[in-house]
Image 1 (cartoon, rainbow, N blue to C red):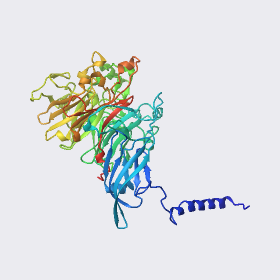
Image 2 (image 1 turned 90 degrees about the vertical axis):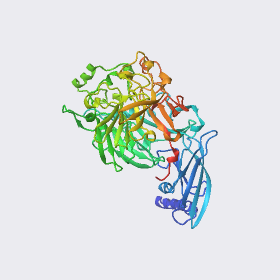
Image 3 (image 1 turned 120 degrees about the vertical axis):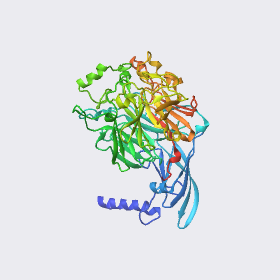
Image 4 (image 1 turned 90 degrees about the horizontal axis):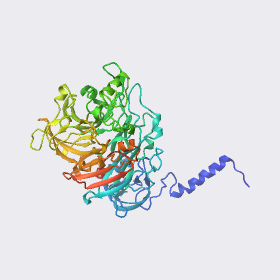
Amino acid sequence: MKVFSKTKLATLALGGLLAGGVLAAGGSGPAVTYGTQGGHMGEVVVNPYRISPLTAVVRTGGYVITNATVRIVPKKDGQEIKYTVADNEILTHGGVPIFGLYPDYQNTVEISYTRHFNGKTEKFKDTYRMWTAPVYTDSNGTPGQRHATFDVEVVKTHKDFSDRLYLVNNLIPAPPQAARAIWNNPMGGALEWSFAPENAIIDSKGEVRWYLHADLIHDMESIYRSGIMMGFQQTPDGALSWGYGQRYVKYDMLGRQIYDRRLPGAYNDMSHSIDVAQNGHTFIRVASNDYRRPDGKRVRTVRDVIVEVDANGKVVDDWRLFEILDPYRDIVIKSLDQGAVCLNIDAEKAGQTMSAEDLAKQDVNNAFGDIVGVSAGRNWVHVNSVDYDPSDDSIIISARNQSSIIKIGRDKKVKWILGATEGWKGDLAKKSLQPVDKDGKPIKCERGVCDKDFDFTWSQHTAFRIDEKSKGDIIYVSAFDNGDGRDLEQPPLPDMKYTRGVVYKIDQKKMTVQQVYEVGKECGHACYSPITGLARYMKDKDSFMVYYSTAGLNMADRKAGKPTHITPFITEYRWGDAEPTVKIKLKDTMGYQAFPFDVNKLFQGK
């Protein structure tokens, strides 16, 4: 019997692999050997960039492929997803991109396309079977939490909205890993907001059709890779932009990185909002990384700076709100429920408010950081959205802790303030919009309480200019009116609080504002969302989308030790209707924002 050395055995083994692998594949040199499932292109790669498990690429197989159309065959009584693919998208991904697969399921995908080879042009329609893995999300250790997304109950969907997809940006609170990195040097900062991501796209039947598996780009134990993923926006090219902690990013729906950047050095703590604007620049809600206050103290500020960066990440401009607005205006802050100030939830403080004496003690105690208070270095303004207005090169912000929607120009001058006039001083007091009725007659307001059919927003989220309805000096602005501190006070009973979506018509020349549409008020406390949320006009269906993101978060019950279950509602209303045409309930999840996702923007090569 022959005895071979280890080297000889390794050589024989390699030769066998070559003979049985590459050479057996039909060539005398390197070759692609993956199966093609019987189609007329190449192999199937599921989750090609490793962060979008319900996507795939069908490789070209070495051919030139053009004019592709993709159809994800629906489940029985399910929702079809169908889209065309620009030729340069096929070149970008090395194959035909597949979006909208069902999880834990053998999907059937139909692809129609033209194949070019050796001077010959042929048209094909192939059918592929693609099995996907179950949805997986991180656990925060809570008993009963599954490694999947939220449960979905479709209450109703009108047939005209049956093609809807909704991107849901939710959160998994308080994973222990997040406590290892705290951004608190020298004073202030907000990286304690480091929840785990729970981001998915659901269809009108309640099925998950995409989700972000963020492990490769998000790390709760790293200062520069952690933070809550927030501010999602579908850009005109169909991709997603968002931010988290010390980063702002853009990825396409297959998970291909377009950019993934740290914030510019002068800023920290992105949260809530990013606007990829019409001028090609990105407006990011951040804070100052190092601000020397008038009293000489150096702090990191909290949610009070807007920075504008160009396509290359270079800073173009910034809006330092502690120098533009009045960081000592406290009339709203003294009316807020301290149990739920955005994501700082403390049931023991439910129903409590801060007094002037409480605020004064903060300076005495040198207290700074993510705490409600006045002056830079504290959470005095809490901007939760920014929207660029190209008509006059300005920004519109939602200032939650001032219960105001504010427009500020490139010159850093306030153009107008939509909110209760009380507490604004000097030139800022002159910028308050005058409420009017439908006939243009002034409506009397006192301490935020207005006659007739008008109400300001209170601790609101998302103030967006409705471009399609705005013209010249007349603009329309939508907002999600959370409703805490309504009329500058806490109500006698907690269940008197309500949330609504609202639209205002603003005459910027006359400095007047008219309330033209509201929804949700009739739902009462059942839809009350003390924190987070979104309201937005949708042009494609002339509809108003409202996400009651924290319905069920009853702070009084939590304080009393009673069980509470956050049950967000996705709703969509035909413009002018009081009742929604779509209502989708998400169960036992911490909601942040949600909005319709347009599959027709995908893979168009723009």
